[in-house]
Length: 192
Image 1 (cartoon, rainbow, N blue to C red):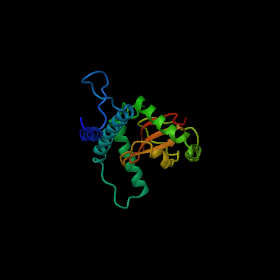
Image 2 (tube, one colour):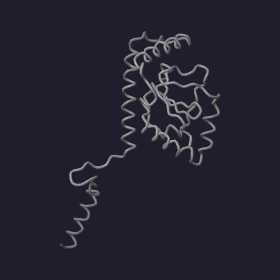
Image 3 (cartoon, rainbow, N blue to C red):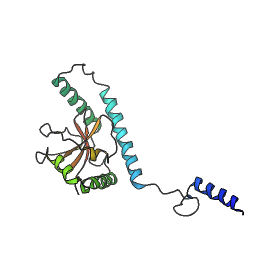
């Protein structure tokens, strides 16, 4: 093979990229990143929750454009009751499965062990008022302030639909349905 043919062969090989790595012999599927698969499954479960939320919310009368705080609270509570009824058997782990909990803890450990980790943790705990009972599918306690979630944390977690928010209560990461003020699920002990 001449130099020119060798050069063309090398360029073609580089453009084609590395050969596919097979998991266990010929014809096996390439391995999928376990965290990516876990997060994709989480996002699918979250999407199913959001679809249920929207279906139930559509059965309620729309809030007026200039709704009063009382009207907003009444709407939240009505939607919350519908969701609680539809998810009567909801339990911890329905959205944050054990695998997803491990991923969340690992992702957040990077933040909390990073250069600004102690500052981020202090900013979260700044708003912590003490132990509060958290239960999946129950109303977020009215006497517990909604924590601010630092940008460093949000950048490391899967993006949520606008109806859901991440919040902290002590060392628990809460998945909060903001329209219904319902705890959709949570992960305990997220601080390393």
